[in-house]
Length: 359
Ligand code: ADP
Image 1 (cartoon, rainbow, N blue to C red):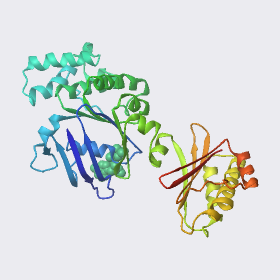
Image 2 (cartoon, helix red, strand yellow):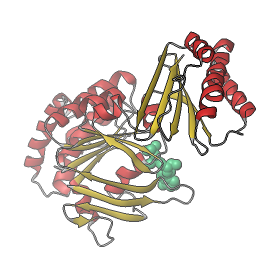
Image 3 (cartoon, rainbow, N blue to C red):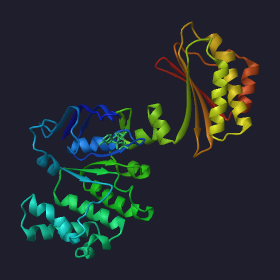
Image 4 (tube, helix red, strand yellow):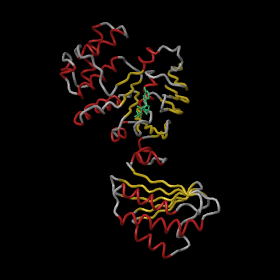
């Protein structure tokens, strides 16, 4: 339905979209997640041409909508957008707000627009508010009207730009319920959201955006249960991460110890926990791995602290042949590390060694 190729958007000071490539199929319900400022809104705004991309192609039903010759009003008819702020006309009644587009743009008769508008209001549970004015409605109700207004234009795809983030928490549920019912009807939707549980429940696909690209694309199970890439994992699990690359036996060991201490203090770890991390690093890396690794190596140490679970994981990742620490029995090191950890795990796949300690 939509093919995006090498999409790029440059602003004077930032480049939120560097190289976005994907295909969106009919019936896809795609949640777009990621840290703020990673171009999620910009992507939606390029799709319906509220922003002109700097480069790249967006092919919708065979037509490149980035082409300046393309009729953007036709594009916007196909792609309805629901914003964070509802943008209802305050001097018009709710039903009039909904009829406006179909009468003016789709040239429907007033009667037809009225009948369809009432049906849509029923669908979002607000038939009794048809003759009210926007100011008489709560935020959640206004957003449900805004969704009905978008549906009245019979779009092929609906873009939701953080539809619940301007709402009082008590009203989030009613809006998500409406979006969920649209997903069940098979509408094609792209939803920028911070509601992770909702994204996991309703989506057929999830895009994790970071670094100006769709950094990871997968089913909700893949992204939320088994994310492949570290940034995705950190985002999903709210992890605080210290990452350090070591490529030489002469690396700055003192500096790394200070970094571990600073990281620990920032996460409010106890002095004992910080000491345990330093000790595990010393025993695993200095005593075991460095002497055994080949001449040239690339080792990454990551320390991940999960605030939610209060757990700490220390992960050593290094390429080259299989090399399991302690496999050749350094009894003293192994005993010290065992004493400090709840679980130890080693895996070797695709020329990569992973050795993890849970503290
Ligand atoms: P997200 O939706 O992921 O939070 P946005 O797409 O809103 O991110 O913004 C991405 C980056 O582009 C941000 O750094 C933002 O400040 C910048 N940006 C967005 N719109 C404009 C604009 N009209 N002019 C300049 N910079 C912008």
